[in-house]
Image: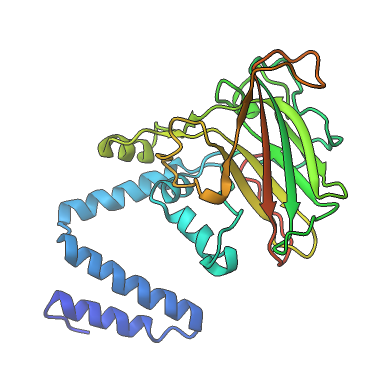
Length: 297
């Protein structure tokens, strides 16, 4: 391989990649090299820009810890995470899906909570919220006995592990679906919050004139043998940033109707108006039930 031009380097690199024994790895590496070389040619990447790019990747690696993954944050901010999710679910991208991004704050072993109970575990001021989630299969039949983990931020935009004022496992809970495939719980209405900005991703958003705020959402992780584990987020349709999520996570299937009620609560006499409700359906796809690795301890 004695090259006389950039195009010859590309041809040689593609020839080497094509010799990879594993078929899938060969497919990936050939496509990666082809597109990567085409990108470099299209933008006429300079030597200074190349050195800066490698330095940025080094810094991203140094920023990644047990509680923060800069590469995952960047993947979300470039739309890569959402793209991978949508291509691998909903009949391989053919239909809508309830799958979404895991996010960085899921924890295992959330407290098992009775259906209709509360996930408020310490004083958490904010608008009251009643949530009803119905879990069904692709035919619309209720999925009974599914484990449903839920978690969300406080009305101050903080998860409980970020806030010393909140009790351990506040605004987290695990429920079992009933005979109608439903779980119900009470909580407080979450708000949107910024992704970390003291990062490479933060600098990119600033350079692009993009804000860092994710729209308000509720996380749900549904586990049931015989179904692909559902990782989902339900987004508040009244959030002012619903159309500008920096992680590109909002989909039509997960746009939740957060409804305001100005009348007294029909059951909970301790709830002052206004209060909010959410009633949403999540669809499981057949597959293998595997829990993801928790991003935080």
